[in-house]
Image (cartoon, rainbow, N blue to C red; front, top):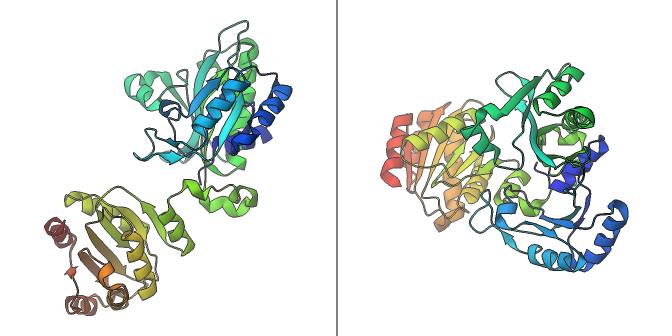
Length: 396
C-alpha cells in the first residue's frame, strides 16, 4: 500500500525523525488558516506547496512550488489543487490532485549552504537482509545517478534479526562526508529511520532529499513509503490511510472479490491460477510477440462465477486484443474450469468480443479440452506452451 508524503512523514515523526513540517489541505478556503498556523509553529516566511499523489517527479510536472508570502500561497494552492498532474510516473492523463501539503521553508540561509542527500531502505532479496541505499547526490533522479555515476551510490545491509548497529549508522554518516554536529544528527536520523521502516512493516522508505540545513539539522524533506499489504492486519490505523482515489479502480474491484490483479500496459489479458504460473504466462505472451495486459491469479477455486468475474475485469481494458487462460489442474479440476469458461460465455454473451486461448493441463485435462473444442464459442484450446504462443501470434 502506497502512502502520501504527509502520511509517511507522520510515521517518521513518531519515531523521532526530523521532518519538514507542514499541514495537508484539501479545501483552498482553509489556506490562510493553515498558513498562519504554520507561521506560528515554525516561524517560516516562505511556503512549499506539494501535490499529494502516488507518483514521483512531482516537481517536474509543476506539482511542487514555492510561495514567498500568503498572497502567493493562495495563488499557488489554487493552481495545484484540482489540477491533473502529469509526471514521468503517471499516465498521459495524469492524476487529479485532491490534496496539497503546505510545508515550511527549510532552505534558509545560515552558517553554511544546505546540502541534499538520498537515503532509502528496502529489502535486498539477494541477501535476505534489509538494505540502506544512500548517496551524496540527493534531490535528483537516483536512477540517473546509478547509471552514470554508480560509484556515488553506497549500500549497507542490515541483518533483520540483529537490527542496525551504531557502527553502521556512523559509517553511513562518514560516507556522506559529514562531521561535527551534522554527523551526530545523521547518525540519529539513520537509526530512527530504520526503526520507522521496521515498526511500520514497510517494504520501502525512500527519502529524497534528506537535507542538511544551514544550521546542521538533518531533515526528511520528502517521504515515499510503501507498506507491506500482508502486514496491514497489524496496523488498523494505517489501513484507514489507504487512498482509493489514487488506486486503479479495477484493482480495487478485484481485491474486493478476492482476486489478485495488477493492471499492465499490454494487449493480451491473462487468467492463471498461481503466481509462479502467472509470471511464466506473462513471459510466454512476451515471447509470442504480445504484451501482457495484466497479472491475474484466480487462485485454486476457478469456478464459473470466479472465471466470469475475471473475464469482466480483463475486458474493462480497451487495449486487450486476446485473452490467454492458462490453468494447471491440481487442486481444481480442469473440466470444471472449462465448464466455468463456457458458463461465463453464456452469461456474458456478446460482451466477450475478443478471442480466448485456453490451455488446461492436469486433472481431467482431456475432458476439459473436449468441452472447449465443442462449446461453439470463439475459444481456442492449446496443449503446450508453444501451441498457446502460436495461437497468440495468429490472433493479435
